[in-house]
Length: 210
Image (cartoon, rainbow, N blue to C red; front, side, top):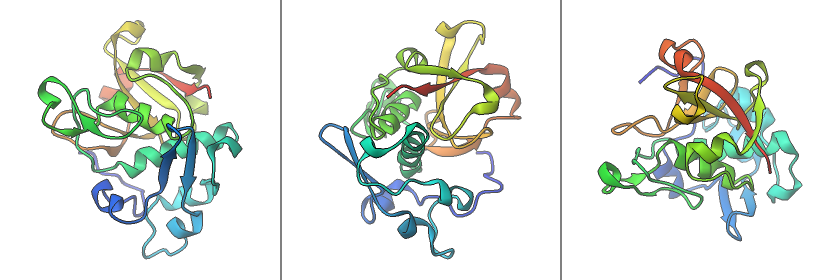
């Protein structure tokens, strides 16, 4: 696991959070989102549970319909961060949260990469599909220099061929993402910019259309 250098105290693992304060709760099939106040999550430096540099950006709202485009991306990012620590499960996860997967993920309740992305954006009011193929076509392409929180970052075995996309993460900023990496791992934050493997397979970023 790559060290998360430069981050302040991040979200505690989701298992602990689920028993306490819940950041986002889907209503009416994911169409609405409730949120704790930014103050509750950010104000006390000793108990802060989000990256310090992101606290000022978080929207403080009661329903997702009131949000502008950039704020919806922040909601998606928050939803993904809340799942930090949930196990990877091949074929697992969807708009309602973690689930048992298929094949070697059949006995693990969690997320694969596209399941996490689908969940995160469902909380922001967008249906992007449960696999990387529809997710790649779920919005507008975003230049690398303009990536912002919540954008989907895609990786392919051959960056010239979208059909070879095999991984997706949710952007925190232009260098880091929250994602479900692979079997045996958990949802976590990793840098992707500057990582030789990720750089070699980076194919582009998409901002889902709501």
